[in-house]
Image (cartoon, rainbow, N blue to C red; front, side, top):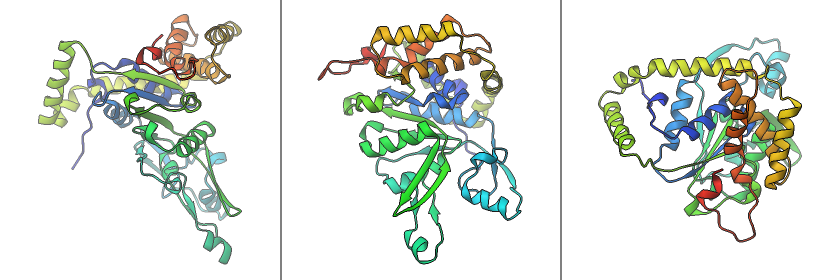
Length: 334
């Protein structure tokens, strides 16, 4: 029985959230998206719908780390051993995964675990892959990330930034690629993330329920139509979804052709200095986001429009606040 997900192109409103996710798909090195806002605003629906329309990826069949057979430098130790034995890397195709990290997850569940006994008694390196291995080349979705223990958030953001998961126990270590689009959601009423952690998310958007009665009615009508006939409803939006997929593929190909001119870099530097943003991560994220947006518009030149959108998505959660000052939703809008 085929399972139908709500079509991405059928989602009403929440344009900033959709754009932030799309830009991270075009360039995952942007650093993920933090989605702040009310419950019931379609956060998980948007993430799953986008993943559902993305093209299948090519993996090594049977590899628990979803290795790319064309990227020999990033192969996991298991695939490297296969090549060393002269075995071929059998190719397979599958959909991009959306991996959810539960709040109850332990560190071993997240990063994976090493069998120390096997290493010490038999000299064998046995590694049980964690959620980071499953999420490689996919999307890692963390609902209520602000309620996750700080040490897990630190680990998660470190791996997301480096693209590599390194596990060491009792002098035994294991390393594998872990590149994914990180999506965190949170309701500010349930507590905030520390500023150091906020800064590690590439982009941040604030979502809320739509205020236009016509849009709310359209949401209800479309949801009722989808529940009555998921297959027929999905067909209605298949052409729009396919057009978006084609545009994303073209954008990914254009991305490396877009150069960041000295003028653009100076504009970015002046903006972050004027706003008093700490560190240099904001500058780097602005540059990547502006370039990804230009690629999404199928241009090879970065315009003022790209910079303004990058500023709106990458700066609000990095703005300096006075000690004990509460964060309001307005602080996340430019």
